[in-house]
Length: 107
Image (tube, rainbow, N blue to C red):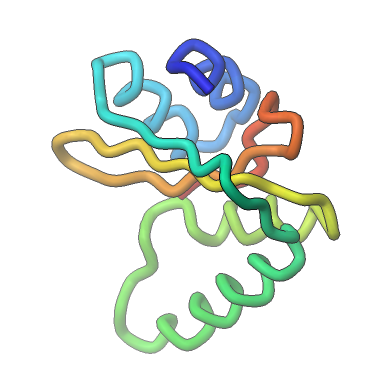
């Protein structure tokens, strides 16, 4: 997956974190797409919703995590790929649809 394809996938997601990741990517941030394996969005939802629950007591979650959890839940059992965008201020975690055209979740 090249930079343009990742930008296109992020541009279809209107959440704040996806827009911020897209801006970082357009500004030249490093990115990596992990194409060697997929995971079920449901499994990832189980993991991240639990982590969000246990961290709610005192430590603020990373921006966009609650919205990303909703996106993973909405994707159900669909397979997703993970990507990262690392800018000077922040690292974003991105989950992409199995066909790599849509951003399912970003935080």
